[in-house]
Amino acid sequence: MPFPGGKKNLLMSAPEAPAAPILLVEDNRAQARIMERMLAEGGLDFEVVHVGTLAAAKQHLAGTRAACILLDLTLPDAERLDGLAEIRNVAPEAPVVVVTADDDSGRGIKAVQSGAQDYLMKGEMDTAQLCRSVRFAIERARSEQQLAHRALHDDLTGLPNRVLFLDRLTYSLAQSERQDSRVGIFFLDLDGFKGVNDRLGHLAGDELLRTMAARLLGWVRPGDTVSRFGGDEFTVLVREVGGPSQAEQIARRLTEAVAAPTEIDGEQISLTPSIGIALGTGREKPDTLLDRADKAMYSAKRRLDTNYEIAEPA
Image 1 (cartoon, rainbow, N blue to C red):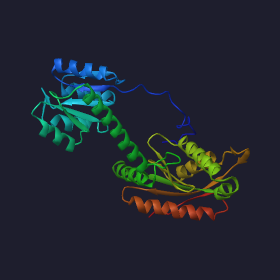
Image 2: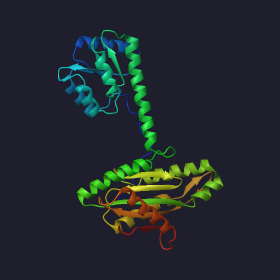
Image 3: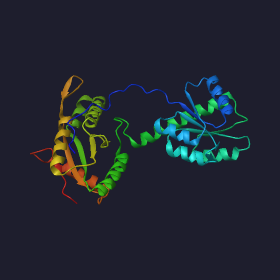
Image 4: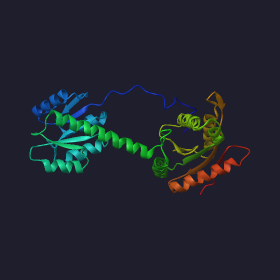
């Protein structure tokens, strides 16, 4: 598969997506109308989509996301917590508030223990309680997603960090074993970055790192991964590499992306990366393959004929 010569910067801003709706899953139409009126009176600025069965809810969620799901625990095609389990399987990141019958508080507590954000009693909830519960569910889910993102991504560039990179590498190696293909790791270190950072300051250095991250993203294929390991070290995971000659071609293209002049504080800066390359299959451990690429990068720094080196096969 040929490596692309370039594409539109993936960090460019896109039009803001419309707000996702609240999905109300309730088979009793009269109860659904009451809850829709409460949500409107409470001033929640969300469209409400009503469905009467679990099957219809799953079909809706297969095509779009929901800001929050209000889920009746007694549906024609789902009883007790089965509906919650299936909803979370289809939309694991969507916050869920379950709605139970008057005597089902025990079931509501079990639903929260199973992943719902909150539960409400049909005969007891009022407008304020319903809207407060929905707001809480949305904010809590948003906070959890932000924490999860920060745990797996670099704060400065937004790129995957080492943890997420190794996870994707593990998956790619498993796929390569089934497909009889090779995975490529390209370990990049920006030569001369420390001097720029010392001369122009950390804010300029941070701007340069964000620029490098955007350029590297612009040269990879969908499904490949660019990550930042810290400092001025980046790694690129290419899921399928035909062999050493294609790896060299990719290294030259990555070099072109990094070396293009960048203006920082009125100064034209051009850096060259040292690139270590390791090609592997599913028979290798992710850490071992990454270590070979890291060592090859340090060997590339000592070379005079080129700025990259391919690690010897394990």
